[in-house]
Image 1: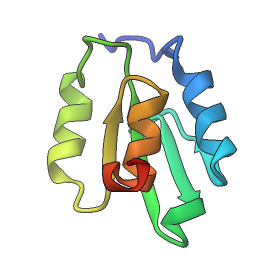
Image 2: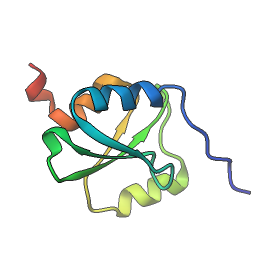
Image 3: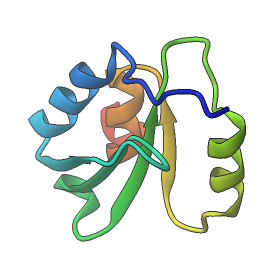
Length: 92
């Protein structure tokens, strides 16, 4: 039996933070939560999975994660999401 997909409580604040730095954010839910583009990403797309602190990918997500060749980021809070887009060196 498949677990019902749920939205993590931190997802809306992560989306707001990404939009505040000029990103377009599309909520896709599956296989990962968000498709992020724009801002410093330009025309590149970044797949993003939002998890609560201490949580990781489930089995199906991990399989997708391991097989997907494109850019992706696992984030637990706004700062990680912004760093995934801007890069840590841009925040210093």
